[in-house]
Image 1: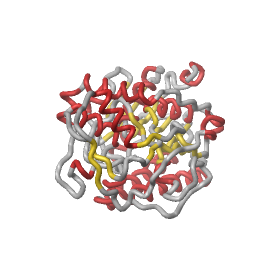
Image 2 (image 1 turned 135 degrees about the vertical axis):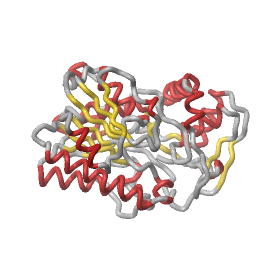
Image 3 (image 1 turned 90 degrees about the horizontal axis):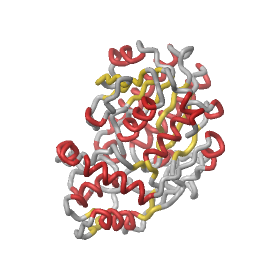
Image 4 (image 1 turned 180 degrees about the vertical axis):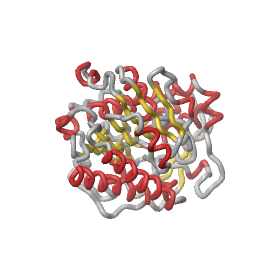
Length: 350
């Protein structure tokens, strides 16, 4: 990102919900290093760790839930000018197991944040909503996935509530002129993401490979995903926050490249030196997407988005982060009992 874009955050107050997560912590660090006067992180630490939040003098951590009115009043008392709403009940299988919690957090939580942003809209320069390209397009969209295609045939509560969030953003933009932007993420990976029962495939693969365990794949391994390095997503978010042409728009933040899950598993094992085999199991009922590849033309033209991290370089960075933080990661990794807890059933999630 050019210094001109980053300079617009200098001496500004920014709210990042979900700022202890992988994308949120990296975004928080980038904002703080860009000279923001204050970066407020609101996170309940249900699926993240306190140690993942950058310890910097201009970062303020508020532990709490986006459904908590007291915590919302606390963070909006700081008068944020930019809001990056990344907090979510993540992700597909978790929402299948806990649909009511998914609706509460992803639906009501997003609604509450938009209501508070509306009250403070004279001070709000941007409300950037973290949507999900893996969710919005459904199962039958033609590749590459383009923003104008949307589907009503969604297969998990998470997909439904991510769509709901976009619809609420549309309403608050058109009715109250809240300057919203909808950024659709695709399969992010990189430093900062802790493995776990409901987490993404790449940190789970790295974790298991470092422990010398077999890597589980549901399906044949020929299935593809559009893996996007966290630094590239952060770059896109920072651009979305300051480019006026992005207001009211939705766009994909992805790599635009398909990667086979089988190839991913082999690459992780090769880099780590894991000799354990790959194991295959049946696809879960909701996982109907055999291939994913996003078009990034709109983001490139609209905000100058330019993902340039090579996949293997990104994996190397993620693996290094694992090794550097291994004791904390091993302590935090959670694969506890539940509907889908067995390692053999952990599959590709967005």
